[in-house]
Length: 296
Length: 219
Image (spheres, one colour):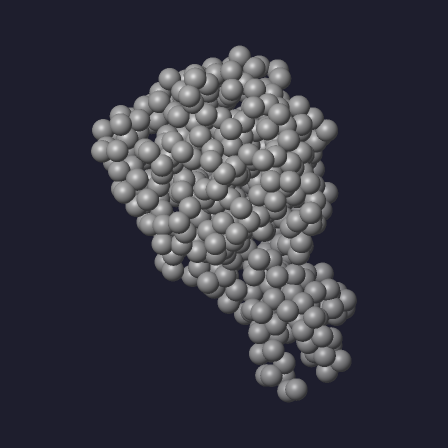
């Protein structure tokens, strides 16, 4: 399959966006409202965030649909609205995208566990993800990105569900913890196993996001590169959240500390880079500057 | 099987997360007339402690932790009637109320803390996620629990942990309860700032924290 976004990644480093939820909160997203509901209730604000990331230099933005699987939305009693939330999510990003830029349909975890730890079967997960993927594809996403996965089995169900519902390329980012013996998901999946099984399942690009700061991400990308020939995605957190006396939240890696490891992440083999928790358009702008300076 | 072998087998069953073995060894201990409380303390608890150590070393992950907690539960289910007959009360540990604070639907970490506490012998009242702050107090008042654990995964909902402590103060109940906080954005520093009695980084640390507070320590 020759997808334009993958073509672009062959010629230069491709820039994703940064955190989305916190940008929506900064625009007044109420605590009890799932962000996905704003795709229909406050479309202008969602589009505004996407536009800010495109203006900062993002080649591709992720849609406001991270929690948009019916299983996740069920926590709000909104499972029956999954399709429309996701279709609207992709449309908004599409509308914000200048010509030649891209939309990645975001698919986050369900927040539930598969048997035996939880109550769900992989088939139930896959069916939910398929519905989400249908909405994202119908709304105009260029690719689907299954992200922040801490359970390889759930990630595989998502790839399967997404591929059953659309022909769009599927990207996957897993969330790894840095442990003394290497990088592991919460469930104990290794980088090597995750990369191999996702590749076999048909993922077109794989990578890591969340939890790791940009310094730790360098090593994780190196481990990914050793494990697979697929294009790699890296979206690090800006360190860990800290809460100030006045209740304001900040992250332990400031902009300068975060971006100084970005060249290392690219050198380690990431073809797609972006931010995760704690990043905003200013981080993406700084990364865009760095990436444009690099030799093609 | 003699007593020493039995106790060793119990520990191994927990470390292996073997539910059937854990339960059948418990039944064997009951048949042999062993003291149920002693069996828990010297057979099963060392097992769950070993599991905790393996988790902290990055050898065990969430599936192993859950399996071991389940094995512990299956053994406790067998021993419970014996413990109730004995002099040690319904549970070796006390009662604990736990839940994720209102506005926050995340429950993975909280569930894990609840099952590890249960595995460690506590009677856990799990109120679920998105729990109104008043509910924690009602449940604790109704059940006689003295420890309340509040989870929050979002930087926007962790302020409810602070509000909860203020609520307890307003009701004049602050001294009656130990309030422990956890969740990704929480920290030891946060716990100190809001006047909580403790913070634990993960489920294993949570069990240690509760135990240490019971023996008079603070964290």
